[in-house]
Length: 64
Image 1: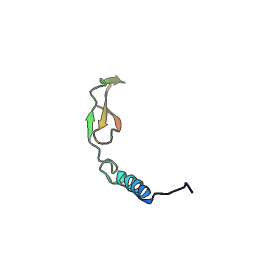
Image 2: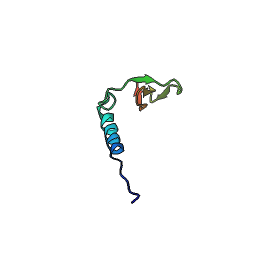
Image 3: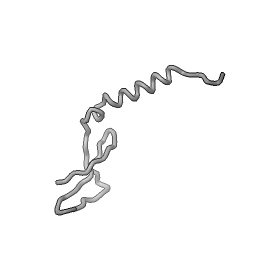
Image 4: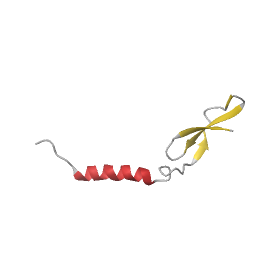
């Protein structure tokens, strides 16, 4: 009898998961900003910089 299911909690979790895909970053519209903590690296004669999204903190590397 200890298996109590709280439906409001389950609904809230479902809404949060659904909302993540509906945000700007979930749709692919990130707000990229260069990471200052890491210095620029040079590989194969190309300049590489690391960028991080201000909203979701996803990182990517860019060749310039």
